[in-house]
Length: 229
Image (cartoon, rainbow, N blue to C red; front, side):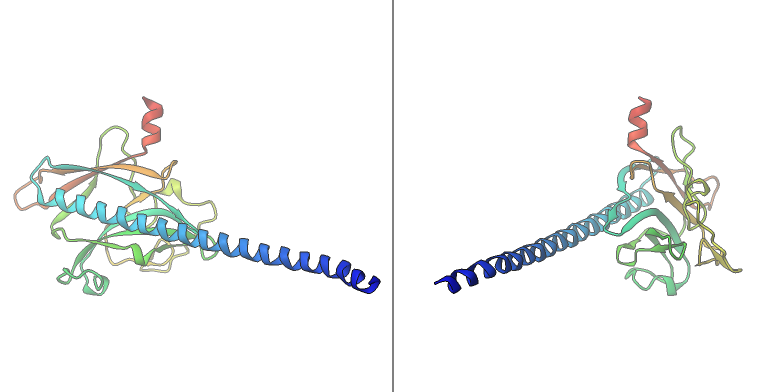
C-alpha cells in the first residue's frame, strides 16, 4: 500500500510536467498558425491595393483631361516584410514583362519594395508586382499641388527617406543597391509616417501636338492632412 502511494506521488509531477510541455507546444503552434494567417491576409490586402491602384491608373490614362481618381495605399508590414516604397515604372524590354499577359514587348508595372538591412538593398515583392495595361505613351509626373510629397526618380525612396546605414555601393550601370540602370524612368513613392498614402491621379493636357499624355500624381499622408486641418 505504501509503495503504490509513493509511485503515485512520483508520477504526479512527471504527468504535470508533460502536460505543461504539451500545452506550451500547442500554444506555440497556435501562435505560429495565427502569425502565418495574419501574414497571408496582409499579403492578400497588399495585392488587392495594387490591383486597385492599377485600375485607377488605367481609368485615368484612358480618360480625357481632367479625369481624376483617388486611391488609398497602405505600406503594409506583413510578418518580417515591411513595404518601404512603391515603384511605378515603364519597361520597354520584353524580358521585364514576362508576367504581364497583355504586354507587347513593353509594359507598365507597380512594384512594392521592401528593404533588407543585412544586404542593404531594396528588393521587389515579386508576388505582389502588378501590371497596368495603359498605353506606353503616358508620362507620370509629380503634382505641384500644395501638400504633395516628393517622388523619387530612382528605384529607391526619396533621399531623405533612406535608412542611415544604406550604402548602395552600386557598380556602373546599376542604381539603388543593384537595380539595373538602362535609362528606365521611375516614379517611386516612399513610406509615409502613418504607412498610408492618399493618392490622387489626374489626367493633364499634353504640352504640345504629339506629346505624351500626362498623369499627375499627388501623394498625401492623411494623418498629416488631418493635423494641419
